[in-house]
Length: 593
Image (cartoon, rainbow, N blue to C red; front, side):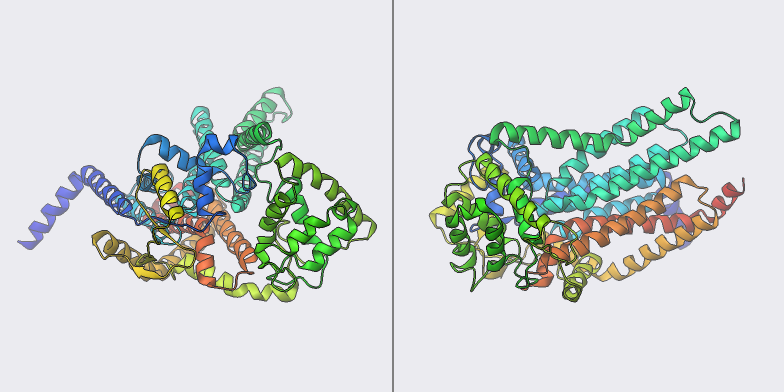
């Protein structure tokens, strides 16, 4: 009796699997939208360089027509997103949910097309991406700041890149489809690149992927001509090769074109062809020169001590003509009025520089400051060449952050450790603790009113050092907290399975001499994802190691993109492992044939 009942259920499920699949996808999508709609979004009211800056930038017409010293100090993708949100009249929280849904549908499409059509696996992959804890995290996604976009946008970009790779290597190469995905990759990469300054850490995976594809296509073309006894450097071959190269580099061409376009827009409105003048352009180059000056007084926390400023001034006649600028830097509010006794830490001097330039009248426009530091940087470059200034012999992984000695590298270990704990095992991910709404002062009220107008949403505000209180426990909050706990609980199993899947698939492909293109692409992409993840964790730890307070919170806040990278690695590796197990006999037969 029971067996008959179970068999009837099984038969019903198999018969109606497509309908059940669609219904489940819709139900989980609606649940995600429901949770997103009840997310308690908030911002810091005393944050002119962070939350409030993004809200101010989001008024795009005002941004381009009313310059101030904070213009061009941060990247533009998140403000453009806020501008778009406001334009549509749709809730900010709904748009965040839509981005998560897009990432979920894309990964499901990629797995279905290139790994397995098993509907159970597709639903589990969709759920895994859709309910990622980082997309609910109180300090990352619930805060009205650019980090909220990092995880979904990173997954969207990388998934479209994986689809493009498979389109390019497919034996049934379709030019139109490949160009379409190339354009999508170019657009998603450019937007993600300009969410934060560390978007450059996603450039290698794009560039390496496309380079490997070009080399693969070149190899296949040479091999094909050799087998057919044809000359490689014939006109048809060259035309085919040029076509392949052009299609492969569409994403980079789009990225370059959009970057040049944005620089030209900035040049028209602000007089400089730069995206960010805090870390690029002549002001940015001056900052980089300060960082590379050899100075024994530099520490892992203090990147630019007073003695470094003095060395720069002694080497530059143009700087010597403006002692008032040095005075403002040494007495900046960023240094509590005394840079010698309480020096500004980390990259804070780059912000202090903008304030000081404005105070002494050297920053009435971007062009004024740019022209001033053009002279200064030429003089500093000459000082480095003639030995007046010595370059630091420390290790630099980027010119925009301080170098580190071999002894200082060990100080990064706690940061790397917490980065791994947060990204792999969801340690310190929380939603139940949130900021207390601030007092009803005029500034807070005005910013809240403007912010809610921009976001088409209601939210709460907080001071920079808020007391904390638990949000009122309600159904969405309870579900979100359960979701975070569940991911944390199963994380150890998921990490183990993903590593086993990656290694197992790699060994399988090596043993079979990489005959299966799709599986080779999967292994190669997993390797690039893992490499990108490691680079991001080390890079963020390198930059953040001057911040001594709350290491776990800092690494959680800054590694939202790397969480997206590792989540994609996990899901692709586990799906690859399941595919191997399910199709073991089939694969052997195909490879023999």
